Length: 163
Image 1 (cartoon, rainbow, N blue to C red):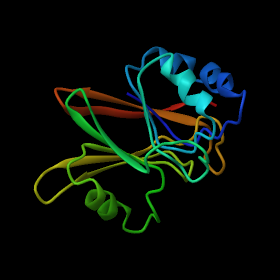
Image 2: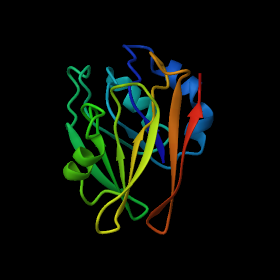
Image 3: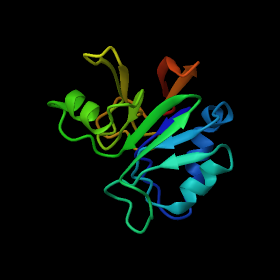
Image 4: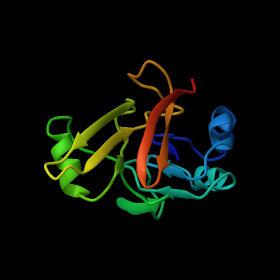
């Protein structure tokens, strides 16, 4: 799975993204985008490479997307939301919003992040912000993330510098 968020590209700029992350798209079987897409053409360009699931970000005016979504890929439940809220109590909040997800993908801050939370019942949940492939803001570089699933469980999560 290729994880994206916060691409922030306007009309006519989708090829900037696909050119930048072409190598990552080449190995993606599914693309999950956690919002702030800003132009439908970005989703269409990504869909030329793999099926795309996306949620609406705070800058996605005019895009008919859900605020939250849950999809099952390779037997693992992935939840998507754009804004996970403040860092304080984020882990508890994401667990409450998506109790059965194996991976929760979020964006908004543009900062790459990965943490693993083990619930009281032993359920492992990964919280992943892929960062932004196009607009790093306070992050050291532009990034995306990949998740590999094996037999319904997360095998690896890794961020990739695309800047």
